[in-house]
Length: 496
Image (cartoon, rainbow, N blue to C red):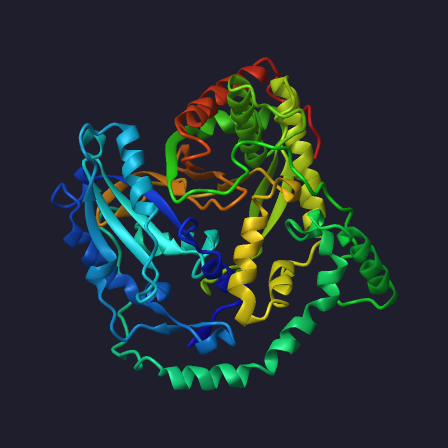
């Protein structure tokens, strides 16, 4: 048995009929490279069956503690049924990208069944040009971005012929624990709960203004300064000192309200070579360029609908804090930065400069925050009230007066070489991420081979059509590429 951390459990607790807690993706494959020139659901079942012993989260089932007196546990599902998790679907004709996106949005919007391990794979037929898709859904309580990539690395190969995998153990999982046994385990864990909370108390108070969204609460900064003074007088090992508080409230946009159960999805691929041309011309990073692209596309769209705020939009940028030693342990090891992105800058070069500067400053602040700060904060919430507290926190995000951010922007590095699933070559992998109350727009990018695959998820009532943003990203790349085209190859206009 493995107990969920408070952060893991929060991804379970945040779920409502309108908000789901799983992350997903649409991978597009060329079946002509597979042994029989096709990718079938039988091929997918056979591959997962051969490798499932290398994928512990695929066998984990939730075992809640009665009365929620302690955090739930993962157990190996003694009644595991692979056929329940691997399914088939098809895109209704005509097989346009819009029809594909609607099909993906419909499948991803269905919640995962908590009576089974929290994942599903859908083999999607009917894509354009004879391609097939695989939609993956895995609950965020079991994986974060990096551990999700580790799951992909187990399923995918570097050659169509596949590879040898180590044999599985013949051991069968134990029977599921009884409710009485889980209650006894929960009661035994009660004395440890105050100790868990006290362990992170000094660091949490000292860095309270850096906790996402907390800066909007009156009095937080004063409490943080007081705690920082205490921390300086009574040093805490590993404490980085008090941070300068960041802006607590983002400007008003249409995608910062209560979300509906329905989603809009759009996807596309940007040229990684062109992004790197911009990066190299200015001496900045790929992530800087991605943020500038998002700011440009958002600025163009908001101008077109007459809703561009004078202040820059604020994006949350998730970051992995997983150490090398923690790889392969799954669960969540994440933190996040709040970044004002340059949607208020009319000049494309200025947007690139500003994106670089704000990200550099945010990383410096982030490096001064303890890596486990998010974990420390959630330890203070008793397990019995975690679900209500998590849902209340999400709902507060939809209150305009407490608006800490506008959207999420995430950029995940991926493989530069072709990958294969049961012999079929992966052409692209488009992320399908999560939105919540108050944050009804998510732009997630994943690099693969020579492209950056983009997935845009929006609430259907706040953004009726997500494709203008995807088209805007493509135009933004042209605009920013043209803005640096006249630079000398060796020139570096931005330092850092």
